[in-house]
Image: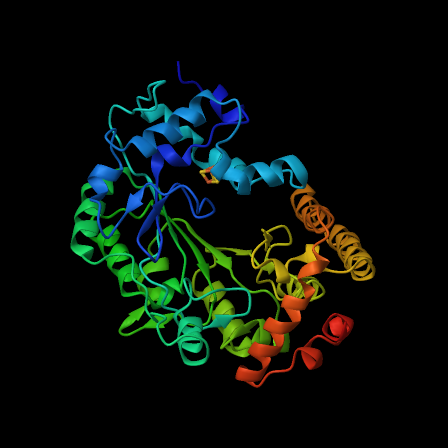
Length: 408
Ligand code: SF4
């Protein structure tokens, strides 16, 4: 009874049937954007049990996905954009890319699967990161945790790790190695993680060079100990997709992603392009108040430098923390942001953009008008001033176009 018609429905997502997502605090989730529906914990549950018909939570989620009529409530980060402001949600992309895998599964209407297989992985081994981005938090960045331990709460744990015992993970991973289609490496910063290289070493050992390596990286480090990720690994794999976590360039990059050096990032991007021209690079900025006027300059620059295809972009719309969300902007600034992105759309069109980029730009504008959250601007000022002080930075110097926000 399971057919590809499911992929066209409003209520089906392939991820709960094929995917493993493990967060830095050990929570096992349906995917990286569903943080509310916890399938288990890597510190206390065996992965074999979590991905089995014995796991009632998993079976129930799958059952809802199969029977509808709507997506489960915990999948609101897909259903909200689908209903309100985006042509495509994360669900649409994963169904497009991995929907074919349901044909290889024997799925039953009660949510059970004859043989559970994990084909796509997203394991956040730890929050180890070399940056402290303004829009990030201590769960995902050890640098922020370090800062907050010093200035806010001494009890904060700096390094948060998903597993107490990684051996069980690697045994499970190895036992699934023939099923793997894609690994998504995300941070902390994945290129700093020992475990990222251990997973790649296993893929190399088993000659699984067809596995898609997908990253979100801050592009600041291409070498780790004796490993050189470009020469030792990416050059060997058939498909490497890099999501460039760059919210802006130049001084705005230094500010938004504290610790990042624009010159180093640029040098690294050129090195990747020269050494592995087939590596696909996609710009994946987090769109917030901070970079509302700066993505265009970065994107056009990377295109002109032949580092990026004009349509290779995915805008991560920041919804949390809400005081950095575009919805918090006052009406006059929203109008200016809208005009700026509309101009960008025209410029991009003149350079040959397609429907994808246009709909990504529309997504940003539509999202901004979904809500009026100006009531959180006080929190915006408080938080920005606090971080400016402890980092010796100056918001008003870096973002003069937003000065009224700071003074209101
Ligand atoms: S529908 Fe969206 S939120 Fe839910 S599991 Fe799929 S990708 Fe994740």
